[in-house]
Every structure is written in C-alpha cells, then in structure tokens.
Image (cartoon, rainbow, N blue to C red):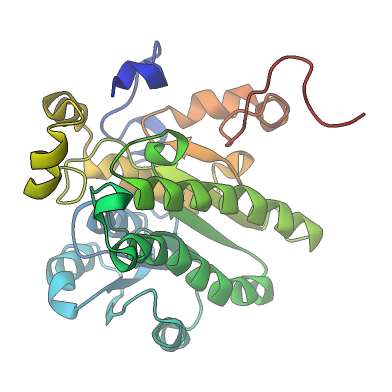
Length: 308
C-alpha cells in the first residue's frame, strides 16, 4: 500500500501544540467543568486528560483497571483539579451507567478507548474481529446514549470522538479498526444533525478527531508472526513508523480547545489535529458544509447523483 495514494499535504501540518491550543492560551478555559475521558491510562488518553486538567476541568478518568490510571491521575492532580478514577469496561452498559451516575454532572465526554488487531478477516476469529467494533464503536455510542439526556437537562455539553484517518481509507489487515472508525465519524456527523432537530445545536457540540501520528502501543504495533509468514510485510513498516512524529499533547490540547467551545463552528465535522484550527475556522462553517469538507462522502461520476 502506497501512503501517497491517500494524498500528501501541501500545507504545513502541526506536530505539537501551537498558538490557540497551547496550555497558556487555554488557561482556565474549562474551569468549572467536569470531563470524562475513556481509555485514559496511557498514551493519547493520558495526554487528553492532562490537557483538560491544565485547562481547569475536573476529571473522571476511565480504563480497564485502576492500576492503569495511577500515573494519569497523579499527573492531572498536579494541576490543582479534582480527579476521580474508575475501572470500567466501556462496552458494559451496566457499568457505564454506574460510573456516569457516580460522576454526576458531566460537561465534556471524550471517547478515546480503542483497540486494533492487524489480521485479515479470513485469519481472524469472528469474536476477535467483532471485539474491535464493540470497543471502537459500540462503546462510544453507549457513553453518548448515557450522557445526552444529562446534556439536555444541563443545556449543553461537548462530545469528542477520537477517530482516525484509517476511517477514511482502505487499509488491508485492519478491517475491524477502519470500519469502526468510519462508523464513528459518520455517527458524529449524524448526531450533530439530530441535535438540531431538538434545538440543542450548537449547545451540544460533537467532533470526530484524528489524533495525528502518535507512536503508542497500538499505533506502533505490527502484525503477528503467522500473518507475516503468510503475507509478508504488506505495508512499508518503516515508512509508517516515520509518520509517527506527533506528540500526544497535540491531540490532548486540541481536545481542550474544542471542549472550551472556541471551535463550535467546526461541530459535527471530522477534524485532523495536525491541521490548524484557525485555518478551518477562517474558511467558515457555511463554506465547509457546502463544499462537503471534513465529512465522509462519495464522489460519483459527474452527472450521477440523486433523482431530480
């Protein structure tokens, strides 16, 4: 697979916090709010939690077990905010409900928990394949379903779904991941439109966010040996490793920025945290929507569309 197939940027991409999303620019931007971050034990999730803490938000951080959360909790508490940690399998509807009830008032939800298995479907067990759909798509919908009535009662709230560029392209060996991330992006678009039906737009604002190329345990992993033995290296492993050049803080600070409401004109869209939010905002919401920018779409032959 040639990465150039998906296009190469001619504009400068960001690889670390910049201008409007720096901790200094967002100081106290989320003060008085409470944020839930799933998959907060390490990597991107930990960076999101700490960025929100730096911006003044109190936190409820979730992961499969409490041991995973010790470092994140300690790092966030250094910023003088309240931090509660919860062991939670986010695919478990009952447990999600218990945790959210215990947290109480919620203003920000970041769905970050995710898993990836690099195997072709034909070499996978269906349960292993489907587990990716459960964690990457079912779980965010469970948390969203739980929090939306709370947001309606409170008069607003922010939901950020950590998506992936993988949800916009075809990547062999990652069917469970790419399809679940595509579904999450589409859900973000659709849910924002549903908010408008109930006059909750823009008070409740959704975003699907690509976290950049971050070298985490998941993103930097390779296929298992039995897959390599059968197919060889189906991707240029070294090239992709060279793409992992972004700091986790870039995604974290972008989340803090979006949670503050400063990027509401981008609500309902799929964003890449490496792209300057001020450039997107300067384009204008009306133009972005009219030109179908930052949305999942299909390009038919000219002339083919819907019936007149």
